Image (cartoon, rainbow, N blue to C red):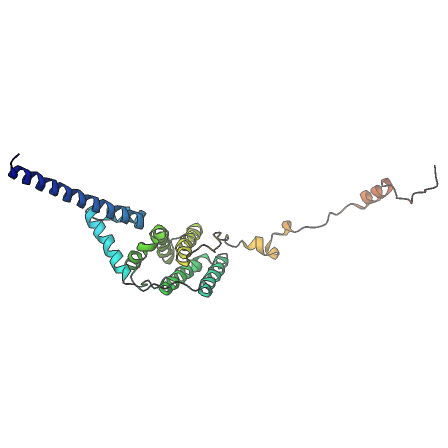
Length: 231
């Protein structure tokens, strides 16, 4: 084998090794993006013209997220938010439509206190997706129901689902799940206010005919003290 052939073979091996290294690095970066963004990765890929374009978008989100100054909650602040959420769920019983707006506002305050942007919803979603991607679908669904609620198009069950969706991101941002997942039913006036019941619902003592009462008194034996001396 001539020296020229050896050089050519070496160059080919080096090129193949370089290509394999690039492919392996791209595969590793793709796995890292999939692991970090979860379902958000597939969502962005579906929205973009190509996978490469989608991955550039996700890496850009990581870069911008790194510029944020995120603040962990103190135990006192965490407890305060948890208590506020419990109060919010109780209010759902009497005013479900208003409670959805309150839930959106409470989540917004928590997002801001953690250090995320609160202006444009799309920008907020992009920033949250880096560390909270797995609850973003809940947040999007809650946002859509809230908009329909403002137009007067959301029913009570949809409003209940909105509160559940808000709760998913809220608990994720708290860094735990100290919240009660159950959203109370809307209050039923007849159930909670006895005075609003129909007349036949009130308990009334049974009225007996005097002749029946006299007959029962004659037929019912009268208890007598037991004579312990009788055999």
